[in-house]
Image (cartoon, rainbow, N blue to C red; front, side, top):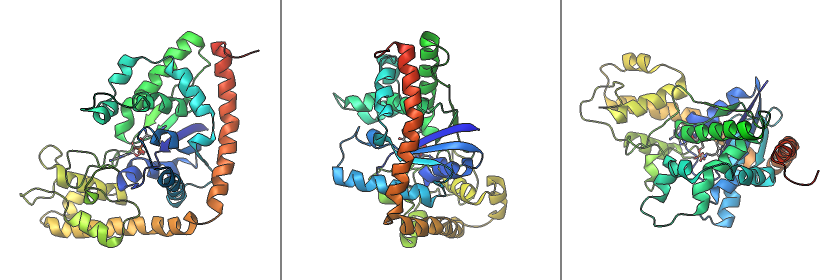
Length: 328
Ligand code: TYM
């Protein structure tokens, strides 16, 4: 069985990009793999957070994990800061990383843009992410397209450390990306990815949005003026994004959708897409409401942390031995 690891930041507004790019894969993978899914709260504090809101968000994301089909009897679900090995390995890896490679990370460049000085945590963010992954001898990391560069860095760090401290130190992981859904774009500006933090709430569809809000977001999504439903990212990014979303939710290919909607207008297509999205998120929302306030949720996270910690401790012991750290 392969070990699978992934994480999501508890930052509210979990949207259909997070779902189609990542969460949807999480549930699919758990039957044939040993899966570990984490709520990465220590990554969330790289940008200052209100403590109360952060704590709520941790439980919201945990409930969404379960609502999206992660079964705690099959997969380990836990909160990053409950397992000390993440921070420990984060530091050890920081010492094997270079400022040059971290300065090249697109996400860091975007987040620190136009700032004279950026929080150090934002800079070392990808090293902590590498620690998350390598701590569990992970071979597969299901993520969206935007994490590709971080996964490459993780692989580089693993190979570098193995070369210096012993080939048994880390398993070198691989990213896993969905064919459709790996990069869901913003609804108001389809040249940018859908984001949790964009100011315009209609630029995204959050998994917990009401049917009315979903309708409004889809119906006002940016398209173009030629009225032809055709997949052409370069010239028709808006309608191409909507076709991808439709395809990712239904499993129908983009080509078959183009045929089905040949001759239809954008309005009719969008109306159908509203139905598709609403009927897909409804069961998730129902399950979320059942689990969010239940005592069960914290129990799942506590047990998950114990299981994760047992694996993490073994890795930390091996890594410390290889690096010559501590008393032996
Ligand atoms: P985060 O919390 O920003 O996003 C969670 C997951 O959603 C994917 N995603 C998208 N997929 C498709 N279209 C989009 N518009 C879109 N926006 C986000 C992300 O690729 C991600 O898979 N650094 C990570 C969290 C993390 C992590 C890890 C992931 C920390 N440690 C270890 C994997 C393994 C992040 O910020 O994800």
